[in-house]
Image 1 (spheres, rainbow, N blue to C red):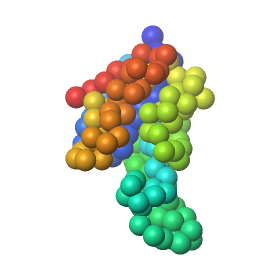
Image 2 (cartoon, rainbow, N blue to C red):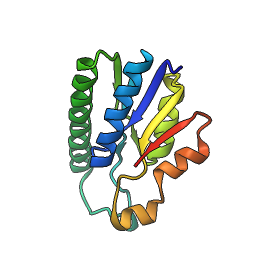
Image 3 (cartoon, rainbow, N blue to C red):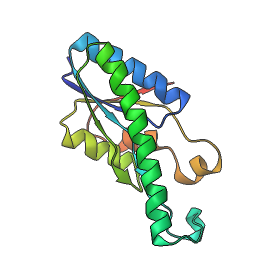
Length: 147
């Protein structure tokens, strides 16, 4: 039924559940899995939560975030391979998680997006709104949302 499934993860407990479900779904459909972790860009102004750092420090911080994302993706790759699932991984850097996920789904020609119902907590989630809701309303692909 599905040939290529995109799974979004931010490392939260609920997104780990989505990863396991996506791996099972991919294995059952003999589909390829595309695992995506979006790396945030460092906030540019005070209202976004930025602190005054030099450009070198900002580059270092963003580099650390990218390394952590790659670590998450490597763990997912190991799980997928153990289940006999072919996998690709990507960690795009973006200010908009939802738009990065939709773009990755188009780029890799996915026919399903699997993601958790929510990830971030607290005030940041309230200010940003729901990334899952944004994907649901803007993606032309089917989206499987797990709770």
